[in-house]
Image (cartoon, rainbow, N blue to C red; front, side):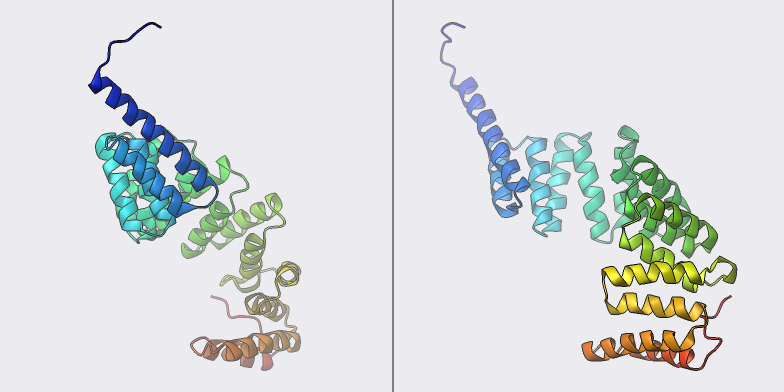
Length: 288
């Protein structure tokens, strides 16, 4: 307390700091409300008030990313790291944005930095798993899919992503186990139920299949969302049970929907499945 002698330099610095803070608060409020352009404008004003503020640059990059301007988002996060190389949010954002740009190899080092400092971040593990998948390393991705699911037991992306990697590696039994555990954890999630039913109905390995359970799951999925993709799943489950006439009826719905939508590129394969069902029994999908 007391009287402070005027100091133009200190006063100007104080104004800059307060200006940055005010714009950051306004920007965060706009961002939380989904007004991303307004948020970007406020964060840009915060950067103008203090060009050396890593947090302002990160926030601006995040808002630009939400607006779809990924190149500018990467630039702002890179600038934030130039100011503060240990800015974890900038590393996380760069990892996420680079994956979106199909630059998974560039994303991995940023995600490694995040995981070194935040090994219990489920979302960072999930991003790392996706980056490794995109770079062609399904085996390495499994560790991170598993860790993400352990840290966040309701993380659907971790479970379905891990199962998909296992399928690509030919580990069908393990994939079913992952999806089965996920279905028990999140029984109302249609994505997990669909993936599990698909594998039980049409897995390349006959010993993994379970037509009865596949049909039960497929009917629930279709009831929740009666679209052609789910109708096709019902047809596959019925075919696995050699209920070929029923499978053909459901598959005809799929063919008709694709024809009405002008999806000519998929029609030959859909019609081939229909002919296969009409020619049965047996009409289950071929196995290895």
